[in-house]
Length: 140
Figure 1 (cartoon, rainbow, N blue to C red):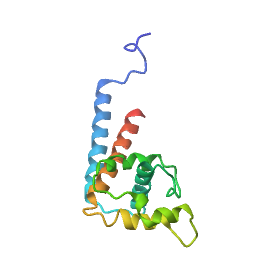
Figure 2: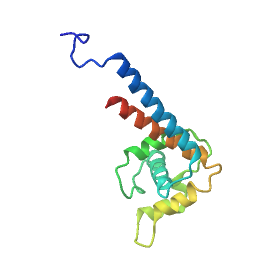
Figure 3: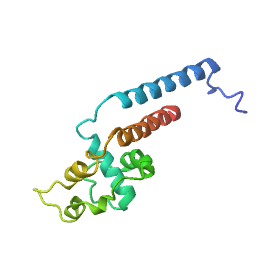
């Protein structure tokens, strides 16, 4: 049995519809990424992903598996003027966390929020998540 005669072949009009829907998802996600402000925990995830990539450690990963955080932070490695997270005080606090210290929140406040314009960091991270959504949609 060849691929052409396979009973599971998707008809061309359906392929076009799938492609169109994936394009709509991408356009909506990227458009929304450019217009909306940070959610309450989005900065924490971006900071956590970047510190994993830049510092090679999981000190600031307080919850959730890090794959999507790391994926979202990949384009931030190309931003030349970002400070090294290991040079900030919360990095050392994270080595010996206590219930009073919130190193990830403090790192986000000192590393991400002062960066202006913050959209230079947030938009690329959101675009990576949008790309992941489209890729997963194409596979499914």
